[in-house]
Image 1: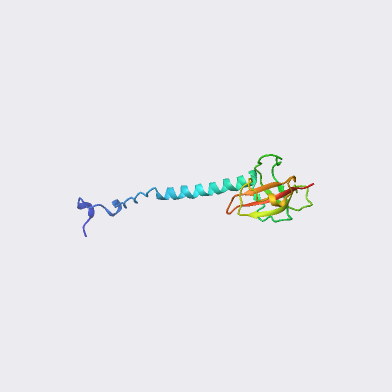
Image 2 (image 1 turned 60 degrees about the vertical axis):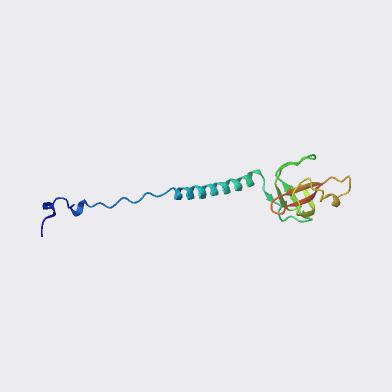
Length: 140
């Protein structure tokens, strides 16, 4: 057997280096960035629902009582969250007289038929999905 050192041009086994791995494209980074953005967006949505008022009244029906997370103005529109609460609770500010599905605007006239001409009432509207309005009577 001959010594490899005696044959110039042939590398020693210890001189053989593996090829560098190919550089990865930016697709992996893009995917990670999109996933992180989605997680952040969901977090912001959840936090805003908690802090700015969510819609815990989506299952409300006639006879339920509602609390709002803002003082509701007698005139105009107040953006507020609503929550079904026990009618004996100090937080109960309104009684649901009727629920009208398929509506989603506080300007809806759907509640007019449930009240007398001079009676004070409020409309809580949610336009998510098909939308709904709650026709509310203030609690005495």
